Length: 483
Image (cartoon, rainbow, N blue to C red; front, side, top):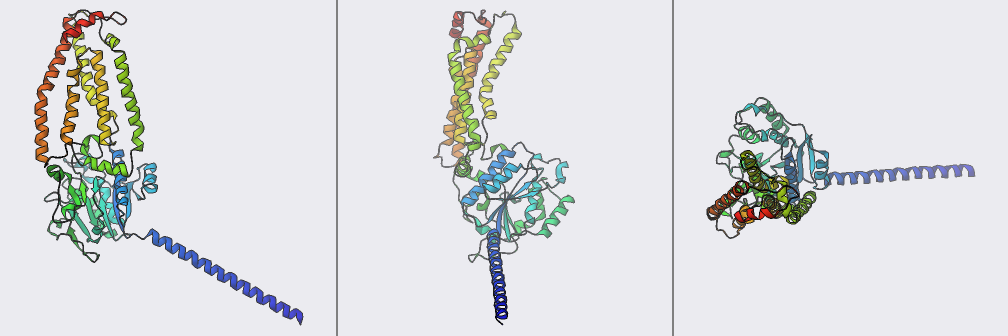
């Protein structure tokens, strides 16, 4: 009997243990589900997104990569309540993709390049060969609204109210054609497939790029009402025009040097100008005053770590060139001048051409050596150092008077000061000041050109004796007197 009771107790213990294990497993499973649910909620907490695109195949791929990262970090710094999406073609380097994902907090969507059937048009610009990839933004159906952006935008403030707009909203910075540098859309696979089909059928496209195609696809936007975000945060339906302040053309700023749009917020500035005057190029400032604003955003977000190595190396090289040129001035001309028969006009002409081109190169070559995306103040300082160092080579090698050769250097420094003057009332006065400065400088520039030509002619034609390498430099004093 005791054995039976013992067996019964053991059975009860086993049942209780199994039940406890089952309960613990159920609790653990429920906890895992809760954690998984929380993770999913955190991952999907943003129902809207800011998106941009990136593709390869242009000479300016790196510049647009830097511009995209600066824009992404600027948006994150504004604490936007949205995901950041980059629609990147498959040939975008993986190290760039990882940097945007891990360092900038963006989600990168890899896509195949869409074929551009308009490349046969006579007015086609090959810079826009792959801009049709922008159509992929309609496939982001996991989001309620998406703001599609070009990388040359400067955000002045948070623009999350754009997510209240309807199925399609865009800004007209051209009186008749809206600008696709910023527009709002409701993703739809039906619209995406239809747009791809229309693209394959070569729908009418006046410019062969994304702007002409999307403008043709939404032809009646000009007649739509203006978007004003509802105060209660509700989503609108339909198509709307966005106020100009959401896509302010930088040229308005250059005209007024200050601007305000009374019909809506002043939120975003765009740069649809010449491609070599984008704000991230160091030479665009002070030609374009807002370039310094873009670089200030980069300085506070991405920084300039990738370019500083090349900048420091070039600075050391130019300082070293100045020192070497100064120390070896007495012997540099011997590398060029030989005992030349005055009747040998061909050699004299060749030497004059070399001298002139060396001066021109001193002011042109630095533009191709300095990293193009560094801060404008650093870029112009390095340019002035480089042009001064290279000019000193021409001065000492050809025994030219320093001041005429350096007149362009002084003129460039002066025009930077005139253009950067911060108290012009508007762009008209600024332009008049620049033209006035150029008018005053023109006689000095012409006089310097005449002086250099005269000095070269005297050196090559009136002086019969040019020492060979290793010979005494005493006879050269007469050349300096002639100059």
